[in-house]
Length: 482
Image (tube, rainbow, N blue to C red; front, side, top):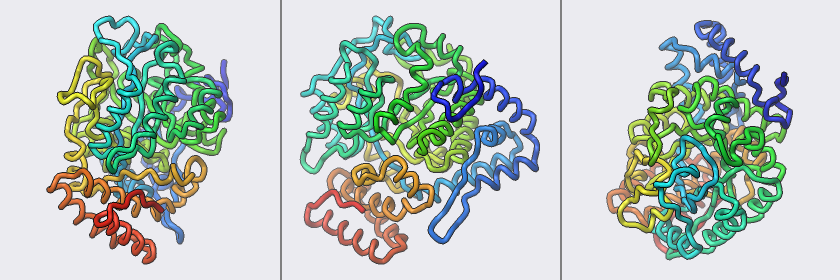
């Protein structure tokens, strides 16, 4: 029997089934232990210091106790602290991105994904480099600066060379005032050598969803194809780190397995990365299974309510305070609005989840990976965020200034990242407003910027930001950053 060891490089030891089961028993036994719950909440609460704010985070056992707790006033306190942590580390900024689907060719048999190899109804498509360029121009015309590229696993149709060519093409496209400044990559688990190639290609974050940490369920949900190898998939982040990628993104697909099990496994994975590499996950995504071609989400009996979903999000924020948290257009406007307050720091906008979808006037559905619940345009999402007090940020400065991995984490954990992220958000928002926004969004945005500039604590930084924004508006200069 495997022994739990967060410093091990073996999947069965750092995501240990026995430890997860013991954690769930502990959480269930203590879910009404008010004294313990109060102590955990106090540990989670952000503490102000002379230089900013610090937050210790929670262990997987502590966080699991909070997730199990169903005392109404304590749940409300969890939400309150989650909001405090979000504001302390990320302020009221929300980073904007879009997915770009390159190919839906796939050799895997994942039963929850319409791209599975046995699905003969879905048309298979792979973008040429000219089509990639056209998609990028369409995204730039919307105002996007940050993409997450997606592709099925197919060594013949989607080899690493194809992915690298696509990244090169994306970065090469400069259209009017548009430029993609950060490409994050969500592709199948691969080798250290291939991760090194991705790093050399200048990617931002490498993202890989575990789907489920429950090994028995994982093997059933991935019956065929290379993704069937649980250990190889689960150990991918370690290989990515060994290949030089220091920003990695975790996630599970909630609804496949019991959520408390997945939650414990997710936090344990974050602890493992911190223990081994000194750097936890740059992002954690919280997708829920959704309807798609050939996929009926009601066939999976572990779906979670909006209430539980909100609680999971808040507890992740308490456990891993420094991580960016992502919610996609899988979720409705109503759900996204609530979760933004509880810890989400990144959202997609104007997304199309089909291969080649951005260049088509009507939203195509025949190659979508999942149904898009929030179908608003990017401009509508930007305006909505501002109306709700959030600063839409198109910033990619940290990545391009080398503030990644432990350098980003050290700034974030001390609260110092706000000194550059807040003005950077305002400057990139100014770019969007000048180049792409509707008249109503522009009016709302520049009023917000005027108010938010006053919140920059350092006079020198505020003066530089004001001058840069003036240059963006009046001299067509772009890409200022601290």
